[in-house]
Amino acid sequence: MIKLIGMMDSPYVRRVAISLELYGVEFESQPLSVFSTFEAFSRINPVVKAPTLILDNEIRLMDSSLILNYFEAQAAPERRLLPAAPGALANDLQTLGFILAAAEKTVQNVYEHNLRPAEKQHGSWIERITIQLLAACKEWNALLEARPVSDFPDQVAVTSTVVWTFIQSMIPQVVNAADFRKIQAIADLFEAQAAFKKYPFN
Ligand SMILES: N[C@@H](CCC(=O)N[C@@H](CS)C(=O)NCC(=O)O)C(=O)O
Image 1: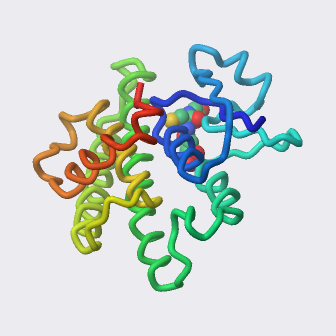
Image 2 (image 1 turned 60 degrees about the vertical axis):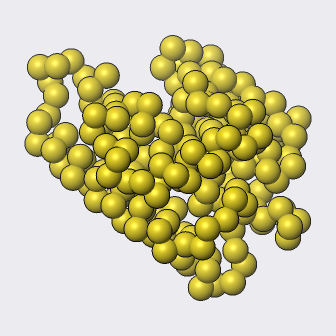
Image 3 (image 1 turned 180 degrees about the vertical axis):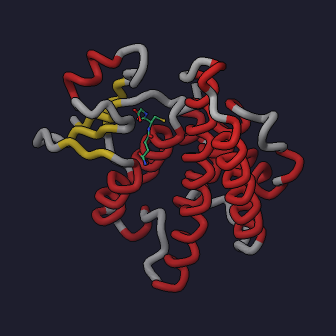
């Protein structure tokens, strides 16, 4: 059985889990932490990156977008989470790029505050990543506003929802939800769906 290693408090792990559910791919979730269970994680993947996905033939896939590429390529047309037409695909990849940049800047913010001792925190770096994070959220919100409204959970909906829930759980004081109403509305819509409830943020 395919194994997904990593915890659902990671937006990268959670986007893979929910996408696999939507693709109809069976997998076993192994919620190892890259911090508190570093040793156990490193026995599976010495690089200790979540998500790590182990295929039945023991091939280890890393990086959520690479993992999703693999499954998207073999999904039945009605289960695909990305559009096939180049124009629509470019639009969705553009949106995903801004969402994933916001996720990366949020992770950097959390690591800077939680892993680094207060006296070693770098103020101008925090300022820089905050500017980048808010810029990414602004583009992301505008791109969602320009999209047709749908309750079909495609890859933009999945990633937008899990990254927003992550940001609002970790650093709501940095990213004010009231400034990004479209992102919030999409998250409210999809967090209520079964696949998202099956793999909650925790
Ligand atoms: N671009 C990667 C990012 C994955 C990532 O940074 N995961 C974090 C957990 S949220 C991690 O593995 N952190 C431990 C580390 O980087 O050492 C992806 O999309 O999977």
